[in-house]
Length: 111
Image (tube, rainbow, N blue to C red; front, side, top):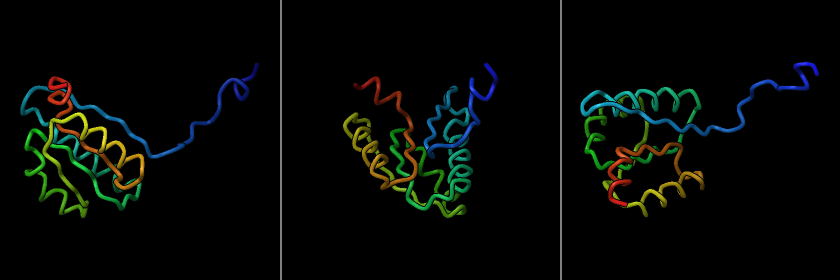
């Protein structure tokens, strides 16, 4: 069997990205994830808001960076699993371009 029958060219099928950032408290996970989000948002030519589920209160520090990059962001302070499920529905319905959860760990432990 030749290679062309064994495998195919890598092609993008959608804009779905799932990323997780780990590290100690204060190590820069939220900032690094935000820099990643900004680059992906621009590269993918997104226009819809980012939904930030924030139970770490870190999103407030990101306002200048997100405004500078003209990225619309909505925020919900929650540790409720039902809110995460609802947020995923907004993503599935194409009402938002990105879902940023900081931190999913608190939601997991509460659940």
